[in-house]
Amino acid sequence: MRTPLCDRLGIDLPIIGFTPSEHVAAALSRAGGLGVLGCVRFNDAAELDRVLTWMDENTGGKPYGVDIVMPAKIPAEGTQVDLSKHIPDGHRAFVDRVLKELSVPPLPDDTDERAGVLGWLHSVARSHVEVALNHPIKLIANALGSPPADVIAQCHDRGVPVAALAGKAEHAVRHVENGVDFVVAQGYEAGGHTGEIASMVLVPEIVDAVDVPVLAAGGIGSGRQMAAALALGASGVWMGSMWLATEEYLQTMAESVAMQQALVAATSSDTVRTRIYTGKPARLLKTRWTEAWAAPDAPEPLPMPLQNLLVSHAHNRIHAANDPSVVSMPVGQIVGRMNRVRPVADVVADLVNGYEEALSRLDKTR
Image (cartoon, rainbow, N blue to C red; front, side, top):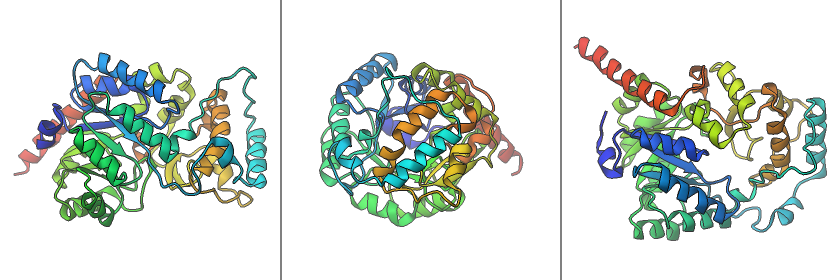
C-alpha cells in the first residue's frame, strides 16, 4: 500500500483522515496514516493552540496536519454581531418555527454554546494558520480552494506543504498554478462541501491535469475502494465520513451519541446535497431538519457565512436534543458502510486488509 506520498509526509499508509476530533486525528496518525484536524470549530486561537499541544503529546511522534476554512471576505468581515444584521427576519422566523415543529427544546440558560460561526471567517482562518505553524504539522489543507498567495508562501517558508480540495480539473490546475502542493479530488459522493462530478470520473481527470500528488476523496470507506482510487492514479486517499462512527470521536464530542446512532442506521441513499448547512453545496445526512428546508415554503439559504450564523444556534439546540431523526451532520454516501461504532485502529486495519484482498483478487485474474 505504500506510495511516494508516504515518504513525502513521513507516514506508513497513504490514508489521510480529516476530522474535527483531535482524538480521532491522533489515533489515525498513531495507526500509520495522517490525521488532519479540522480547525473551523475553534473561534479562540488559544484553544486551538492547547489542542495542538495535546496532539503533539499524543501522536507518539507521528506526523499530523490541520485543515482550515479560508473563504472570501464577502459579504463582510467583522464580528458575529456585525454579520447578523444581514440576516432577514423571515429566515429567522422560519428557523424558529421549524425548531418548534420538530419539538427541539431550547437550550438551558447556562449553556455555553459552541459558536462555530466565527471559525468560517477569513481573519480567523488566518489566526489558525499562525497557531498551527508554531507546531510540528506536516500539512495544511484548505477546504475552500487555494489559500491566498501569502499564506501559501508562509507555509512553504516553514517547510509545510499545502493541499486544496477540487471538484473540477480546472480548479485543480488553478490550485497548482497558485502553488498548492497536493490536490484533493473530492467527488460528488463526499460529505460536506462537494461538487457535481463523481469520483470515478473526477480522480483520473485531475490526475491527468496536474503534476502534483492527488488524493482521492468521496465514496471511500473500504480497502477495495482504496485500491480503486490508487488504480485511477491517486497517490493516496482523503477520508472524512468514516471517522464519525468511531469510539475516539466521542472522546472529543461526548454529546454526539444520537448523531452516531443516526449514521449507523443510515443507508447510502440517506444523504442530500444542499446549501442549508453553510450557504455552499454540502452533503448532509437526510433528516427531518433537511426535509423542512426542502419544503415549498422554505426560504432560499443565505450565502456563506450568513447561513452559518443563521443556523448556528439551531444546530446547538439540535445537537443537545439527542434526537437521531433531527440530526444536522455532514456525511458522505459512504454512510451506508458505517454500520457500527468502532476504534480508529480497527477501521484502518480493515482498510489495509481489504486493500490486500483486492490486489490478491486482481492477481488471480491475470
